Length: 124
Image (cartoon, rainbow, N blue to C red; front, side, top):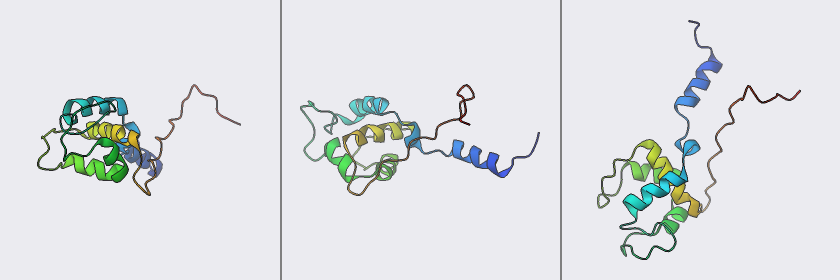
């Protein structure tokens, strides 16, 4: 087995530690939100009931950054249920929440890198 060179090591690290946002699925996040969050928060348009002290997802999306939300959901407020979400589930839920907008001064995360497709012809 040949040793890893710097480029191979970098590619391995990027793959292992890639941002959860890159793989996030807002549709799965919506399912989580309806199951876990809708009892207290307004999570979707048309929802008729929520707790008065729980902000709607539209407000959360425009007040919190992606990173703030990921950190918060990993260590939620004590009055929230213990959802024991995985990193992927947190990323999915954050992606769903952020469909309602960006916080002031926030930029969306970079899109995932395009993988080299051997079937696709190369330019040049």
